[in-house]
Amino acid sequence: FRYTRRFRAERAKNGRGANCAGRGGEDTVLKVPVGTTIVDTDSGDIIGDLVESGQRVLVAAGGDGGLGNTHFKSSTNRSPRKCTHGFKGEFREIRLELKVLADVGLLGMPNAGKSTFIRAVSAAKPKVADYPFTTMVPNLGVVDADSHRSFVMADIPGVIEGASEGAGLGIRFLKHLARTRILLHIVDVQPIDGSDPAYNAKAILGELEKFSPTLSKLPIVLVLNKVDQLADDTRDEWCQHILDEMQWDGPVFKTSGLMSEGTKPVVYYLMDQIEQQRERELEDPDYAAEVKAFREQLEAETREQTIAAKEAYREMRRQQRLAGLLADDDEDDDEDDGEMEVFYVR
Image (cartoon, rainbow, N blue to C red; front, side):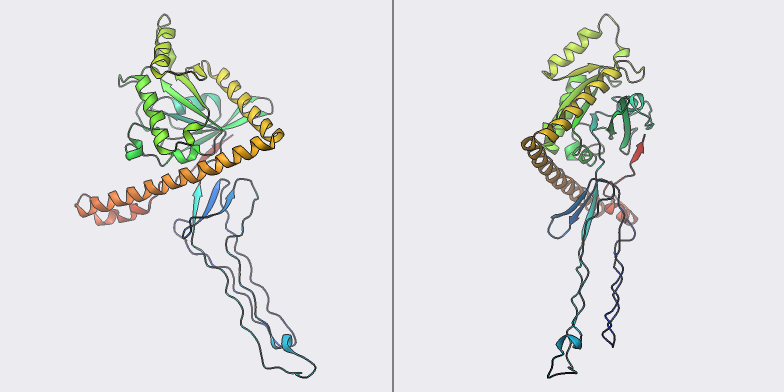
């Protein structure tokens, strides 16, 4: 859809004599990935949200044929010379938005060990290296807790302080967390740059709040990662210091993604929480309605923020071009909205 942007359904055939109606035109079907939201560009209304395999949505209805002269035939007018024109089909300009569908979303600073963690608990194999922003696209992995018990985990590029103002990779990837049930906040207990892990963790939560106050209300599980780099006699003390500085009173786990140490308890906890949420939605209609309303608010909020971020990016590029900082042939990059290929590994 990046290069072919206009689609037209087949035109129907004209009617003929002997009461022959024209053949209807063939439908044009556009195949999109699960997780695609269809938005009317002019009104901003959501036409459809494709969250299940095989789901279909009518985006633009075709026209209807006119009435031939046989429709006006009567006992006194056996051969009328009257007909009506058909009705034109709908024309719509739409925007396709893709968000990954996952139960758990990984959140954290660059190089906090998110990709290493998802490699340890699933079959996903995202790129891992000893420098920040190794992950440039979201990665999905299926996490097996037990036999017939599994959930999907999403790893997105790291977020840094100031992301809401465009720093680093900005906030364009945070929208992929909008359809998760739980956020797993990975914190590097001993950052390679010597920064304060508690400060980094609070900065991430602050950026999440700026991007979407509703998104920040999702359940968050804290993971103190890379504890294998701490001395055994100071590990607990240092981890407690981080929690005290953050004033954290939620669930917390200590892990080493590289050594696969402490990852299983995290997986079991997440699986239990997800199953409890699913069961409650099935048993309690009021809770299900509340969750649905929350999801709709979250979708609208993240969409608004994402569009605003794209417009701000394009304006920045325009100003840079006017200042002579960009070549004219960089103009095509202004249409790059940051969409990416999503790798789904089972």
